[in-house]
Image (cartoon, rainbow over all chains, first blue to last red):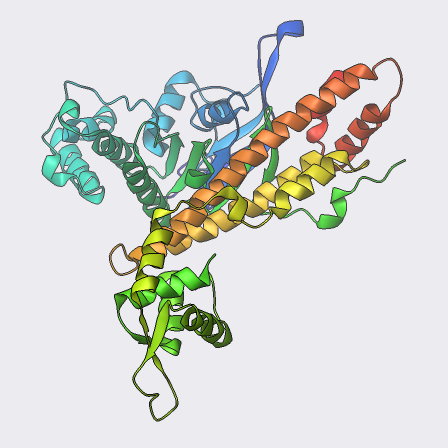
Length: 250
Length: 208
């Protein structure tokens, strides 16, 4: 999937770019900086884990990346498109086209079957029901759930529901996948199946951001970045030279 | 790790040559604990002396000897399996000692020590996870259990490092509050941390 933008710019392999992004909630003395000068590039085929304690800005980062929140300063680009310059309806369309979300609470619609849940974003995008269903079945096959396509969410286990959510997140041409603690309430085995799946989707060309506070889950990523109080403090891709560990006393 | 009990447990499966014991030991543990042949024979000699194994038959043409486990040896193996490993039996933890030293040595940026270690531990956690994806559930069952033990161990280390980071930050804040009347040690530290990482100044927020 290449980037089609009004300016006709050439697609890059960076699916997500955060450029010096700051997000401040509130104003004046009571303002809280949720994210501070964060820059991050996620390329196609790459799974990046974001680690940090509660309140470190992980979810804010994910919301900004998915166009669910707006920056105070700095730019967020998805498939080369600056989310800052978009109207609300344009943003909604961008999200449907390019971004898939997997959240801890699955947000599957209880009155729709698995395949209907997965097909929904395509139908909202104006794809005909029949071809949306066909695409949804393919997406379910990929998460090995095609035989359960006509079941309702409450007839599926937690792990199966999460796999449906992943299928839904990636149906169609979208290649940015944002996952917030996707293994939330799952046991070790089911959680691992979800991570394997995310990993496989990234290897197939998607770009993934996985927010987690568990190192064991973050370890499935190609790169792990750490957030502390809204700042990126470190990442596994870059080792700190040992010499710098000692402060030079003035 | 007890080589003695490891070898006894292997012989419980059936009689083996010394070189076979070494190969079996390594494949069971995914080469996590490489043994040299010398270690194997020294251990076998001791086990034989203590009546836990005995040599069976004559050495083959190349002088290799088959060993079998005795009843006493068998009892020893089962006693081993039924006894929990205590923390005291494990080797000293270099990382814990390093962190303890870092906290009490003037001029060391403990936060940076923690971050450096956490990145390194996560990198090895990534590597272990990669190895795990390559292993087969059935044929590599023993190796997978050892791998997962290391994965959970590394995870625990990261959690402990997070905990250290929080504690150190709290400590720095308290020290800064205590010396806030003048330009004390903590304030100097904040400047230095700021200049280098640009991000770790938060832990000295109390001094502003």
